[in-house]
Image 1 (cartoon, rainbow over the protein chains, first blue to last red):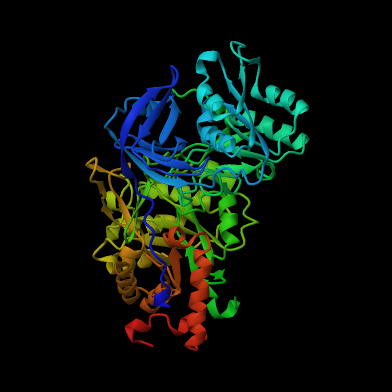
Image 2 (cartoon, helix red, strand yellow):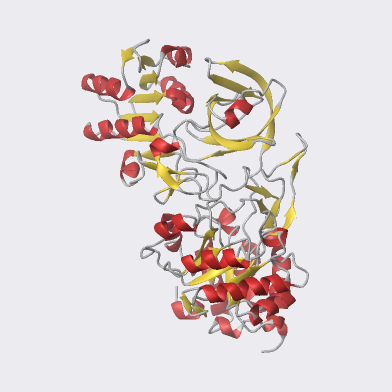
Amino acid sequence: MASNYPSLKNEAIPISYEVTNVISESATVKTIFFKGPFNALPGQFVMLWLPGVDQKPFTLSATGANPAISFRIHGEYTRALAKVKTCDKIGITGPFGNGFDLSSAKSVLIVAGGIGIASVITLIEQAAAKKIRTEVILGARTKNELVFEKRITASGASLHLCTDDGTAGHHGFTTEAAGILLQKQKPDCIFACGPELMMKGIADIAAAHKIPVQLSLERYMKCGFGMCGACEINGFLVCKDGPVFTGEQVATMPDFGKSARLKSGKKISLKEYFSPKK
Amino acid sequence: MSDNLLSVNLCGMHLSNPTILASGVFGITRDLLSRASRNGAGALTMKTITKEPRSGHRAPIIVSFESGMMNAVGYANPGIEEVCREYADLSDVKCPVIGSALGETPEEFAYVISRMGKLPVSAIELPLSCPHTPGFGLMSGHTDPKQAAKITAAAKKATKKPIIIKLSPSIPNVGEVASAVEKAGADAINCGNSVGPGMIIDIETGKSVLGFGMGGVHGPAIRPLAVRCVYDIYEAVKIPIIGCGGITTGRDAIEMIMAGATAVGVGTATYYRGERALALIADELQEWMKKRNYKSLEEMRGIAHGKK
């Protein structure tokens, strides 16, 4: 029996990477590049440790030789992250999670709302590079908050913009834009990342059109690898079973689009959960 | 799995096998308890609950090293009020559930226990041994024999359900503490918690990695320490012992039972072997017992003491 002792993996410890560049994508979105190589599947995430501050999950907005994470500045942690400079050290654990599955799709629709684009940008680039017909709906509150438009068009994907205030592209939500697009063409698969109510809307539209859908979920995450249970949603662990879930899976989650757990584990409404932090 | 070979009675709870999911690992919500129960555990321990909600320590809260892990979760929990709602119905959890209650004072312990006692839990465990949270456990003298006995007595008054006292292998006089809580009415001892606190420093930044700066050390690195503590406690008390600390394989469970454990707590092994770690350990335990012709766990319990 002793010979069967399992190997003791040691992957749950941050490794320091040197920051190579920091760029502003918009007034509120920044990208931090660090020294690669660092490989991960589109949709997989890392836990990013800022020594003395906290550790939070981020999907990589670039992988390979020049990997990066992109974030919107909106709380204490991201304000500290925004102060990171070239040559600083950041701690990275991972990659974790399942990632998106392009499998045999010949045509895809990728819907991104707000900073959700950071989680699907490498998926867009990979899909387009594989000559998969790639339609992208990119939404934001206003024109100045749209990011990665150049990367999307450079990849060869077709980009459809949409803003809540009509300052660019379709005047309205990404869900409406998706509804309009789906009347003209039917992709093999839909992918989405953005505010949960947007993803709920996309999941409903995909179900109505009988198109498979994959959604990247967000819950308060602490460990990132399935031990602490903080990111649980109806018995699923977002860090380990996800963060990408299928339409069939989210259909079994009563809390999807409704409620989420705080750091303490207390369940509250999504509206309360995503209300601006003081 | 043949039920009778591995089955064990712990404080009136019927366990189909002696593995118990340790508190704070994985099964921290009702739905996760249900999921863990489908993965072959003999029993499950709920996360530890305090009177008021706690957000816990900053991340990282769990990190690995070459021979184990460290954690400083800081007792994140939604508070007993919320827990009474979430855990009111545990009917889809297919094995006994042990509650875990915590307070700063004997009175606060009693308050949480009296509320928790009304939930469908089979026993309540009191961790008196956390090495990394101010106000609790090792950081507040809860494992002083007199204080531990006081808390135990208060707990016994607060519920009719069995009370399990969780001690720390960090305490040198662990047998003495075990004896004190037995006299105060404890129904079982769990030994034990993570040890320490310990610290891991990231040498590139020169900063301690855990958000709290230090944390409890657990996993294979502490197994010999936990085994010795269980051995000492078996000498000191008559009540059953849950041996916990670094158990990763069936062999480790056997060792703990030979030291005197009635059941074994498993936590870190889920990191190395996945969610079904407890079932794998139980399978390996059973396979070995069959090979050696053991007919029950009772036959090998405490044999390291040479009394049987």
